[in-house]
Image (cartoon, rainbow, N blue to C red; front, side, top):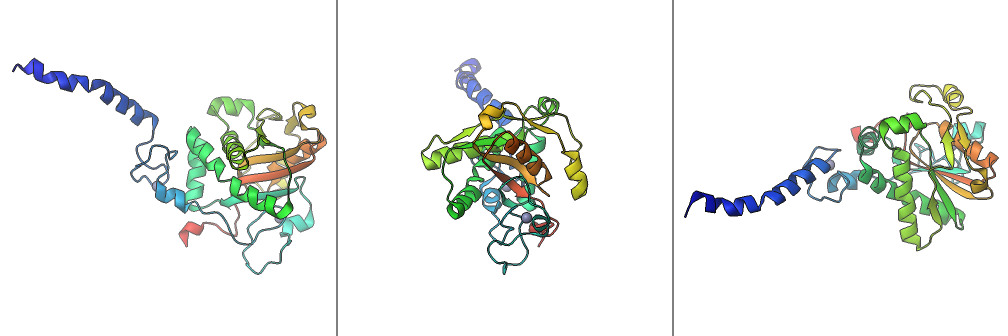
Amino acid sequence: MHAEELQVPRSASLPRQFAESMLALLLPASCVVCSGELTESLSGGVCGGCWRALEPWTGAVCSRCGLPLASRAVMAGSLCAECRLERPHYDFARSYGIYAGKLRKAVLELKFHRRERLGVRLGRLLAEPWFALQAALGFDEPWLVLPVPLHRWRERERGYNQAGLLADGLARALRGRTASAGFRLDSKALERKRPTAPQSGLSVQARRENVRSVFTVTAPKRLHDRDVILVDDVMTTGATASACAAELKRAGARRVIVLALARATPQFPDIAAR
Ligand SMILES: [Zn+2]
Ligand SMILES: [Zn+2]
């Protein structure tokens, strides 16, 4: 047998090698959170162990803004210090978990790398706080699902809006679990009129100033008398969410519920470090 003939089966596997190397380019080879080996391809780049570690906050929260409260012995309906001082423009806000540990790492991956599948999958986690709130308050449908918008320059530069990916995942999860078409994603109804400095590092007052008159409703008719779920990746003081809700309500929205993937709070600097 000639050497050339022996090479036939090897060259036949070239398309497969090519397909595998293309796949390796498209999918991260290791978990984006822990850098461990990835065994499932449909994981959004996060290994099974890390997914299971993205725990929801199950302790007490402020009944209005959802801020996790340190004491478990909080009465139902308790408000945090901020909400006692001033009522936000949204009706209620809840977060899936605390911005710490693996959840924080996953959010940073979503924000700074284009991980669309991860974003949609993380968005599905927001169905949990939604159903908990719905069970407590008895909401009817339909709801519009809106992401907190980026300014169009920033969205163009980044290529995507991470809150938009989360909102997409949430809307899909809610439609799937309720067998209802009552959760429509609308990424265009709310707009950020100008780019703003990052909120991190600013005081509560400075955060409010930073987002004052920044958001606008593009088509008030679409919001009139509608109930809205507003989605963001991280909520800290809630100044951004409240500024968005003020505009949505001005346009005639009935109720605005804010759902964030992670809540940043100095009370729980990093639960993973315990
Ligand atoms: Zn991992
Ligand atoms: Zn509160």
